[in-house]
Image: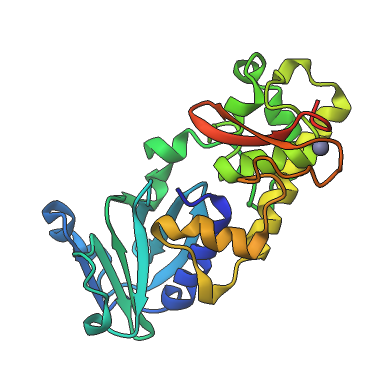
Length: 269
Ligand SMILES: [Zn+2]
């Protein structure tokens, strides 16, 4: 699943196409949404933003389109409707004079009153977004004091969108490596300095991954990990058996919280 950096890069790409333009064509595959397309069609797009791994497209008139790609959803872009790839039937098409964007496979799509977005089930559970410029280490450290996180281990917490929105599986390995923390540590046992290292890594690593993204090579579907690897470079993720970049051991792979995690026992304690 694309993680925060890929979702934010997608929001940038969609913004270029949509923001301040009028939606000239809107099409949903879902009949109930299709009947409501007038809430979007003919209206000007005010903003496209990423929140965690969801994308929010706000239009004038007070409505926002919520989309979440989950495991298999992916976007494609084309100059006009006829040029859309016919790999499958798009679930959603948004067109302006600047071009066409289409969402495929099995995403979540819903329409919300912009002032009622707080009730959207996914958004209502999100913690601070590691890619939101207003979120800083102080905010993350305060959020870490939430009692329900105290007894959980870092391998679990770093996939929990309520703990840190926008985090995901490759980021989890890279954040723990930068913070020099074992994935088996429990949050309440971290010393103050260790918490600070964790908070800083939670901000640094996703933001570096985002800055490494190039518009012309946006990840889509299952390709995103390849693209991310090429652009960002991983220090430990999918590097099982390699020497640790810090020179004190070899990278190991463990399955933790159901996903692959890569780390070094030498420097992550
Ligand atoms: Zn090491």
